[in-house]
Length: 190
Image (cartoon, rainbow, N blue to C red; front, side):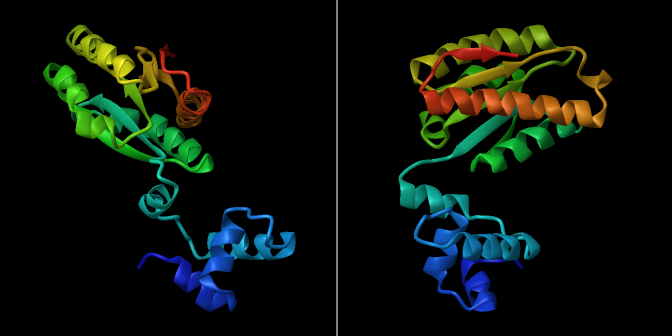
């Protein structure tokens, strides 16, 4: 069962409000209490509910990671690195497998665009020409819709060991988050 703020409050003896403020580094809570509650949250495997946070802040804090259909196993280490860095910066991720011929249609889906802050596209696979040409049309739409995007395409992905791939994921995600926070809406390639 997932650990909730209520659970942390019950275990610690603090109110839900105090626990929430401590985990969000509110200056109203002492450093000692913040450290104690963060340690408790870590030990209880607490994961913030990003949907609730986004609703309260009126922000999304969601990054979409797109990659060719049926290729997650090829990119799992990069995606793990993206996920780790996104969590570090307070973002959640949505994974989306894209059929090359549907890239433009997918990007044009305004409902998808309105739910995310940025897109990371991984597109290094054997049918790259088809994916790239379809994605290029779609990325123009991303720019028109003012959505920060990062595209990673490199035929050396399979040669990376697990740690190198995770570090690459960190770098890609950090670049996108920097663009999101700076309001930079142009397409960035890695």
